[in-house]
Length: 259
Image (cartoon, rainbow, N blue to C red):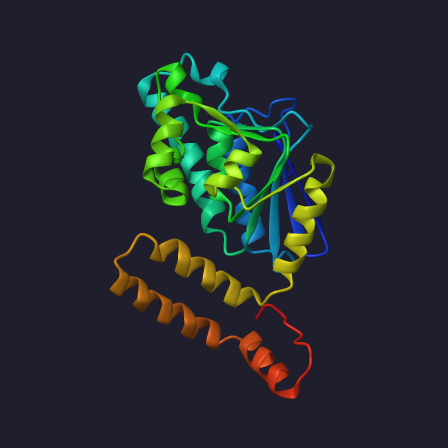
């Protein structure tokens, strides 16, 4: 598929999705629909083992939702706008492959919410984060009130959402909002290193680990442990499990095929 609001490239088992509305990469309906389509295609692409999500330019990962599109929407239309965003973000969150947000510049509002959907967040030292929607008389509508508390705890999430403060990369690291902070010029290099490590892992086991964690977080512990067993058995049935255990017993490096 040909995309306009995003760019998709693939190299050495890693796909990179770049938001392509510089300089601020505001999120609009077109981006949401294109992200959904791209993730659907990557899900079935066995050549891709990991995905990097980033923004074009050096000013913003995504500086928020496109307010010019939202400003004159009716309540029904804005509901559909939020639905489009949540559909795209859920697809990213539930992609059976690891997703890394390489955060350059501003990740505000919907941009921060997009980063929250990813499995890892690597931030440039110039990155800034926030959910400033309160200043517009609204609240986060693409998962911020739900994913942020689950990641950093309710008290800190309320502080960011209620006050609308914008924090720098160092503060985000301290909160556990990001996994790593690197110099801006090394951002994509670091994200690619992590993506290549992840893409070399057995695909079925990776998908099952992600599913067990993401789904299990929303279950009671007994149900979550049952889910873990189900995911374990699925991974155990894979060809890669046979290869992994065989390689371990033969004291050699495994050759995983993603099956």
